[in-house]
Amino acid sequence: MTSDSFSAPHIPVLLDEVIEALSPVEGGIYIDGTFGAGGYSRAILEKADTQVIAFDRDPDAIREGAALVEKYKGRLRLVNDCFSNIGHHLDALDIKAVDGMVFDIGVSSMQIDRPERGFSIQADGPLDMRMAQAGLSAEEFLNNAQEKDIADVLYLYGEERQSRRVARTIVAARPLTTTFQLAKVIRQSLGYRPFDKKDPAAHCFQAIRIHLNRELDELKDGLQTAERFLKAKGCLAVVTFHSLEDRIVKHFMREHAGQTGQVSRHQPVIPQQNPVFFSKPARPVRAGEAELARNPRARSATLRAVYRTETPFSEDISRPDTHIPRSRRQSA
Image (cartoon, rainbow, N blue to C red; front, side, top):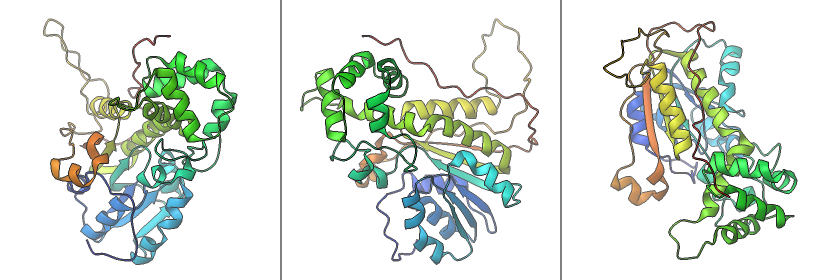
């Protein structure tokens, strides 16, 4: 890829593997559902004479992507919206099908590395955590929500087994206004010591962020959109960074490829009732040592990819529910 004046603070994870899965073709149309700093979009545009329609709910990402739009005149379109709304925009553009889609799920390095956005436990900033910079902030949620609701969020989206204890401590410490205040409260609640291997504030911040931005619902909607708009043999590539996201993607791909789980050999074979919209999912891909050495944030990344079959899409077909798996029962 050529260099230019656009400086990307975010290193795209598993970039080579994503581009290999997408295999961009001349004249193809591709969707980058999570534009960020434009790493995947740029690579797709450099690989072949393609068009990319990129989405991001964060207005900062759209504004800072103007240099790429200028460079790839007529080939890159940026849309300031959630990727759950991709279908609406493709309908408006009268685009019936696309050649590939890529989603990089979760918070971007651009957002984490800016303390004023309130996503990080490493630098002090306001309790914000809003990807779209609009709607309910973390400060408003934590200072006004019922203790039970806070505990449910920490348990479901952060898999925090002692979520009730943390929620009680948060409520007792109100009002909270900064990330350092919240991180301190969480650490004190769970008895964290500086030499402990894992900082419990990290997954609690993750849980609050996922809740505020409806990230798992967005993911499920985006996956359904891919089913509708991908051409036959078109690729859906999804990069996730934690188990909740990865489980949703894995279950969706398997179920929509007709893999309903292992059946006992003592039970009769039940014919497949639902149409198969995707091929058998490829094996999950994780970062190698070379990538981990230059980008430690890739350590938790998982890439899953599937390819669209020729089965025509129909709104009338009943589909499996892409559920959020339940965690174990929480303790006090």
